[in-house]
Image (cartoon, rainbow, N blue to C red):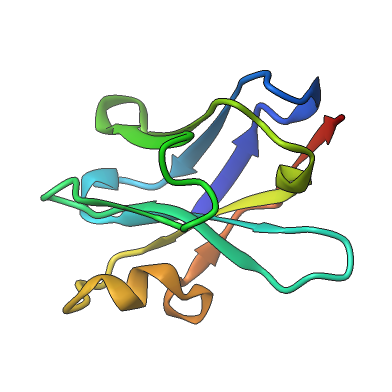
Length: 127
């Protein structure tokens, strides 16, 4: 699976951005997709995930209520709508996929449980 993340940029605190992740794969609907981010000198952090089939979504505590993940299977695309951005949201954002069906939300929030990764898109939020 090849993934192409885009939509990052330089914005001010309080602004919004929408990231896109396009997958080059057939039967995209059979993949769950997660977004992770990594700031300078920081560990990779879970941001959001959307499961295949059910469309169930999960969010990291730091983005709940501000970010929304969605998918359009007809376009092989997952979106991450980011509102009320803060300087601490500054990071490289990565999308990842897995075809596996895990029992419980824990696995979708952990990066080792994803199989394919995109190249990342930089988001910089100035104060």
